[in-house]
Length: 226
Image 1 (cartoon, helix red, strand yellow):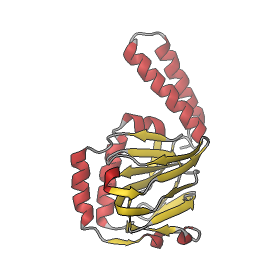
Image 2 (cartoon, rainbow, N blue to C red):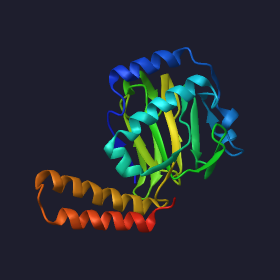
Image 3 (cartoon, rainbow, N blue to C red):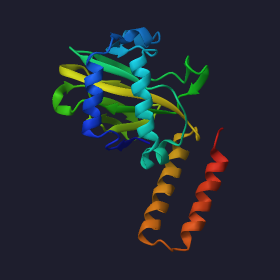
């Protein structure tokens, strides 16, 4: 399931975050690349243990978990601390698949990467290129969203970032381990949950709301990995 979620951050929140990121210590993104990624990755990142990245990452997580659409779609269990990257001057990241498991040095936990997210922190008119290209069951999808907007997609997806030929593209990216490992099951639960919410709002006393909610939770109980 590929999902665009708007307004995770307000324009004012994006601006504040951008001002702090300008002075960040950006390093070669290949420092965190695996063997295959070294051949196709040319960008800059803030180091994973940089205090600014850790602080801003927690701010972003707090906004994510308050968003009902995000929570319904991702069913988050554990986050890997969000990271920040910058593409400019032709920087790109060729086709790759994210690693299946990441080790969180802060907590000592391993996080299975079920869901990937990119939160855009620059608007599309600020840079040329930089589209996130994601291969999914419906073919290649090109994503370039307004600042403060998020795209979620399965971490199993092959994806790339097109070269940025003008300006700079700054984003936050992250992975999470979901309560439900399989993307198809998460998609089904999301569709059911959204339908229940719409029915509850349009016909609050509809007798099927309780039974549909029961089906949702019984499926979640069957599929949850905790």
